[in-house]
Length: 172
Image (cartoon, rainbow, N blue to C red; front, side, top):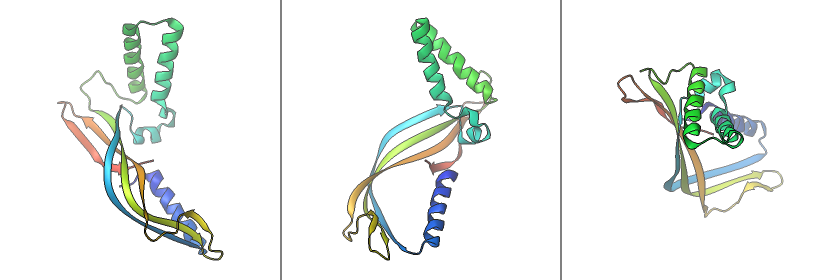
């Protein structure tokens, strides 16, 4: 499953190719192995929430910047910094319309970044001039590594059981 923005990117590439028949494109790939690079949980925020309320974008970046600025300017102790972090997260939750203190379900986004080692043949050639615009014309292919990013929204119901909302999807 592809994220909507990524789907549109591929769709536009296909439309561009159809409108410009002077390109020859070849892509052949075979995944060989994969390795988990990072796994990140983002409490409270989901893409749906951010799409509905764009002011939430970069909320955690702003929260962390604010905390470190306050620590430096106010010479906060670690216990004070911890309480300030909890207060900031509660404020973010209220902005999202979520109460983290109640027994309500709480959604989080989990992002996994995976290195995928592949055998690949890829090129884009101008059909008229023969100029290679991208990639390398080589039938034997080459070993390349791609970084893929996957997301899923998980939640906890009122009993604390993990609930999966949807499936893993490839994202930007």
